[in-house]
Image 1 (cartoon, rainbow, N blue to C red):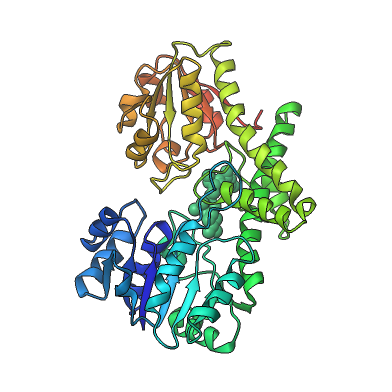
Image 2 (cartoon, rainbow, N blue to C red):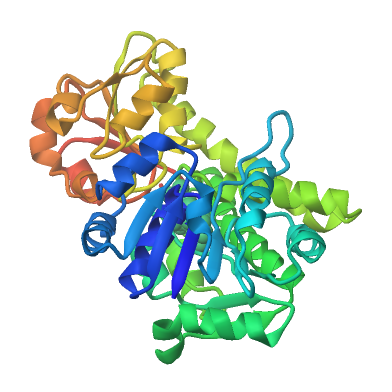
Length: 433
Ligand code: UDX
């Protein structure tokens, strides 16, 4: 099939490459010339495992092209809208400016029978609004909403083999077109939910709200564990054995960040308020507040570990990205902690396998090194805030020889505290005795 993907950020670049990998003929469109130039050369503009491979193979065969000219989308049967919906300045609502601009500039290029497919995370009601506009100016085309659930770090896998397909459609034809797009997944028996626009939009918001709630729930339990001497990890294991609860997404720590969960729960709350249903999602404000509190807890632990002040103390921060296997530092709890400690007068050295470049752009005031060993040398306190494999695998004895003081805060509860203590370390975690 001939497909266009409009917007080549995290979502769009992966989606375009994955569609080409599935055998479609794809053009990726973005207004950012540098991004398009890099992608056209087969260079992903961000770190995502597996993306480089499928991008280079698809660009080499010519199945995947990139352009800054919307006219190059003309002739495609399916157009995916994959532009960003950031948090609007000064509010918690989603900024739909990019969705609206991309949609409007696509309208003149729609062929007869074309299907426009929204992938961006939008406030419920957006699809109906865009569909009405389509009826007005391009009645020969139709609209579907097909939310994306990809996780950074697993984006290629999640796109090629999703755990479910959700189609928000107004008629059967749109669903059958999407079935052809995702034929491989459909034939593999991937569960498929065909529904209306509003439900499809809500599915995405609800999924992210649920995941955020699950994380804040366990973080709230970790606060109680700290107050009582209980162990939140054992608690998570025990409640996780109940299949209705499940162990995944019950890891207490510095909390959630990234380009999705924080802004999506805020936008969802803002939308509920617009709809006169603010009470229904009032709890998400608490979810957000619990989450933000975890960053402060890690900072407080650092202050306590250093006897009441971090001023002029050398602190090594392990990790700056919002999660491992990503170079994304958007709303990163790890980077927030590092900046906060620096603000309190600490001599912070931050390290990360992939995120330093992005972190430096946002926070040039921090010292960075890509070498874990160099970062650790002379540390009076180590703060692990992103659970990269190499930090989880650190050897407490060898690490102990590098630092000035054997003190570590495990902000992700991933270290074997007993082994570290046996090597002479003072170890503190969140909700762990
Ligand atoms: C999320 C959703 O998972 C995905 O379905 C949606 O499409 C986009 O938003 P992503 O932002 O890539 O994906 O990251 P995710 O793996 O969900 O992690 C989000 C944050 O929660 C990270 O900062 C992570 O460290 C944190 N987290 C996750 C926890 O603190 N504890 C957990 O148990 C799990």
